Image 1 (tube, one colour):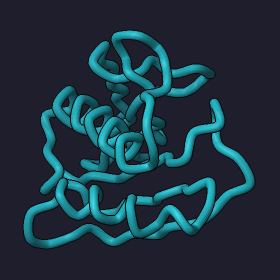
Image 2 (spheres, helix red, strand yellow):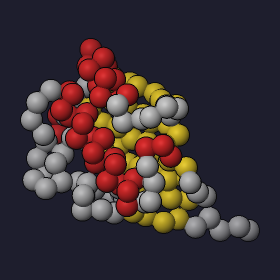
Image 3 (cartoon, one colour):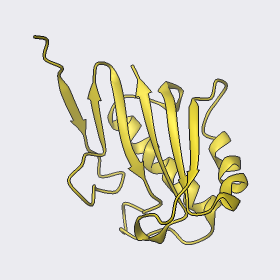
Length: 129
């Protein structure tokens, strides 16, 4: 029976997990990043501003975890965007587009009833080596 090796990643440059999960985990050359919310890792607070400012912070947190795993946005193959309200999609999408160069990853975007800390946006992603 083949054993799949798993490696977890942690960086202080992104918010620490607030529960029993890792910032990211790798198996079989795929790196799965937990959902990031717009928490500034240096303060532990949600960033001020609207969905654009929150989306920037989310992507900076994602970038920090990708960096820790030795990856970049060009390695991201799938994202899932969670929004507190679908009316926020356009503003989030403007920021989102700026973090990818050329080929965009596959994506799902859904509106949810609520997000942790009452934020407006959370994004998770999968990257490949």
